[in-house]
Structure formats: structure tokens, C-alpha cells
Amino acid sequence: MVIRLADDKKPPARRGDSERQTGLVLDERTRTKKPPMYKVLLHNDDYTTREFVVWVLQTVFHKDEGAAIAIMSHVHNHGIGVAGIYTFEVAETKVTKTMALAKAQQFPLQLSIEPTDESD
Ligand code: TYC
View 1 (cartoon, protein in one colour):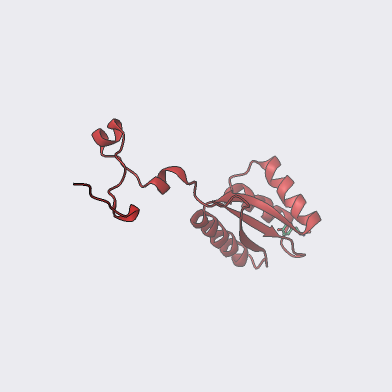
View 2 (cartoon, rainbow, N blue to C red; view 1 turned 90 degrees about the horizontal axis):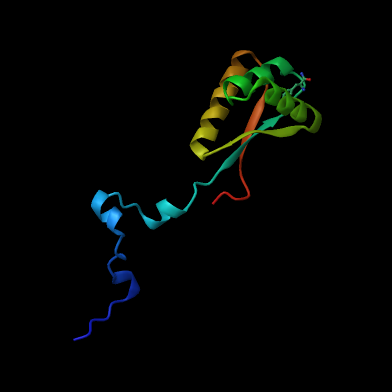
């Protein structure tokens, strides 16, 4: 007797030997898809000091002094620039921390989050 099942009723494809032995079977999507990534954008303003922006890039975004100065100068000259690229949760945390540090010093520094072109 032949049993025909619609594709969505079929059991999942058999896993390889090592997966069966370890029990470490991840969903197909989990194994193959990279997480979407997001740019944290820094916005220029006339009041936040250059020193504060460089310090934030070093302490929150873990840039070395040279990279921090280069990013700050780019933002100062072009109005906007990328502070770093992260998963959404990490990007959001860095934005929240940076804006809290700026606010504590009464700097109007603004940041935003934007998906990268290859966000999935
Ligand atoms: N434009 C600021 C100044 O001249 C410096 C600055 C750079 C501010 C980058 C914000 O994201 C910024 N003091």
C-alpha cells in the first residue's frame, strides 16, 4: 500500500549521524540564516563636545582612540556616521546607554538604528 502525504505533513528530513548522536539538532533556519544586523548611527549637533563623542566611542563602542577620532570627525564633517554594526538588541542597548550618558551631561547627542543592506 502506498501512503501519500502532503509536504507539510511529512516528518522532517533525517539528520546526519553526528546530529543524532549529540542531540544538537537546530532548526534549518537557525543553522543557515545569519541574524539581521543594524547600524548604530551617530548624529552631529553643535553642542556635544568632540571629547565626549570620542570617549563614548571608546567606552561604549569599544573603538581604539584613532578609530574613535576618525568616526567623530566624519560625523562632525558629514552630519551622520556609523558608530558600529550589531544585532538589534546590542544596537538598542548601546543607543540607550549612550543617550543616558549624554543626557547626564546635558548634551543633546542623538543616535539612531538602521538595518544594514544585508540584514538577513
Ligand atoms: N559638532 C560637535 C562640535 O563641534 C562635535 C560632535 C561630533 C557632536 C559628533 C556630535 O555626533 C557628534 N562640538
